[in-house]
Image (tube, rainbow, N blue to C red; front, side, top):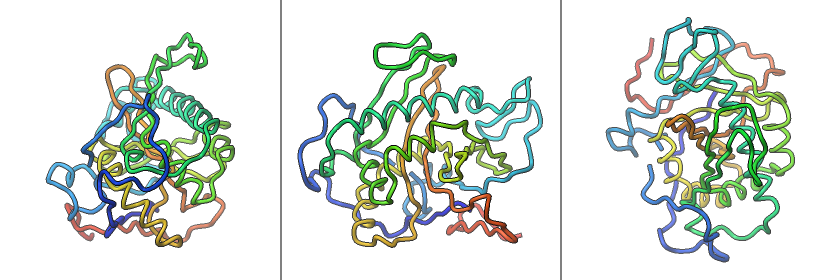
Length: 273
């Protein structure tokens, strides 16, 4: 079951540093962002954007059918925005491997207000470059949102960089079939630790907007039951932007589930059956 409900997050004042030194000068900066988790906090377009659903081990999409951006190509492989699942998984693993490894080589510092709005970008040509390895996927650009802030969150949740990289990048990701109406694609790490979910533009924007308040809430309430967000990324390929969020997996396969309840926390466009 996907945890939801980041309601009542107190937001830090924009422009005031949380502590420490300035953010890196070579990072692209994005301002004025939005991610829908509670209908009351969203504008009309954002309200339509966020519909969370429970991944399932059954209920495949038929060939040629499409739900949202999720579909199936002629070979039977899942696609998202016309990008094959294998190419998307490969890009995610290459991108996270590079960005987390690169960040680990930099000294830790305090989180600043501007860190929540930083976006770092790296290009992955298929033939490789002096910074990236060669690969057999189409060329893509990988963007990492708020890398310093998410590094802090992972540390706060007890996730070491080596463990994060090992879980996400060492073994093939497992695709979870999903009958939900939003058309998101879900991936599970082989060790059952993390869930990767595709999100829409408005969702990614709103999550980034929530980060200052999320930071303050985690520091004031270390035992919070809010969702654990470990990273927000974007794969740009073929003129498409595919945004994904990495979260904790609260339903490990080794635990036998007799009943699952998908609690939404919102009545927007929903009704009880």
